[in-house]
Length: 143
Image (cartoon, rainbow, N blue to C red; front, side):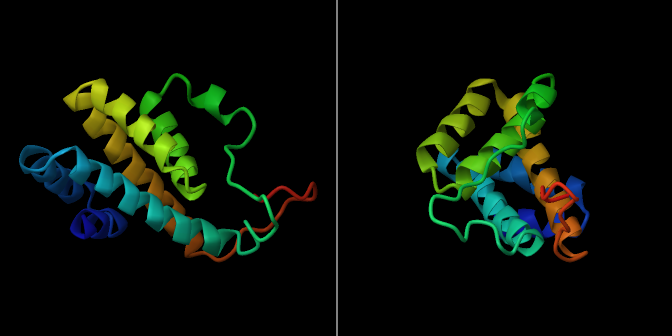
């Protein structure tokens, strides 16, 4: 799992996808779910670097920006990546697993594409986090 993430973060998506194929062929549902959770944990680190004050107040939780789910409705793989990451960040393993099961039920190709999209999403967050904390726009919403 860590090798898949390393290749993803180092900008080698073909290598990450190749290793994901190995996990798919020789692993089971728990292994693939573990890849998704490891990716989401990496996203947590990136998002906390981007938004250091996030989650500091009681009852704080991560949410998709308003309208994002509607924007991504035509791309189920990106929607999976965003929703899975959000569920994982909110320590909601039941929802995270339900989302994973839904993409798994869609078949091998859809599941693989959804996981690869999740990995690409995490890489994008990590690259953005390397630039330092996000600055809020004048309305106070993080950019």
